[in-house]
Image (cartoon, rainbow, N blue to C red; front, side):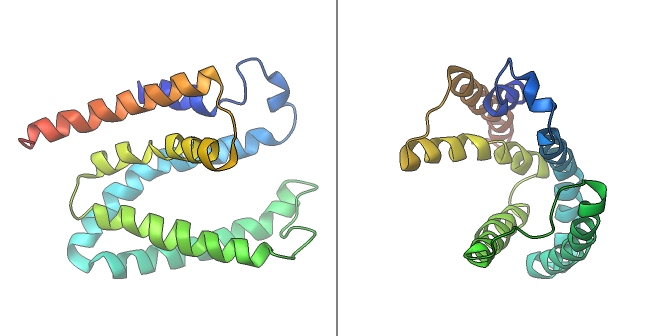
Length: 175
């Protein structure tokens, strides 16, 4: 249910074959790969944190991810002709990069890792599906961006799927 909701919510348009003519599909493929990779990542991270703690675990995870991503970034210009390692204009870019690193990575992902000490990997994974719903709601409220009927329907599908996934777990826990 939530998977169908995510597909509807994030689709560029149900009749947009031009989306696949350019390089936009590369970002979609990377997002799908990340979505699939989060399950083993959270499961393994939960097991490791029991022994080493959150700070030590995320320190190793973030350091190894940084090394790996620099390798990918350096390879991308040769793999995708026309792509660049850095934007052509650097003014203000580093503030954005720093903000993404501090807010998204250190706060957001460390909170996900910390929550593994209190919830199952399945519950945390289900909760991550709420990200596009909150992002869309914030974009609507803060920036006046509209949501299509498909996105609204997809948002309700995501909410329903997460409710079912977490509701069953909460009922099993006696809550």
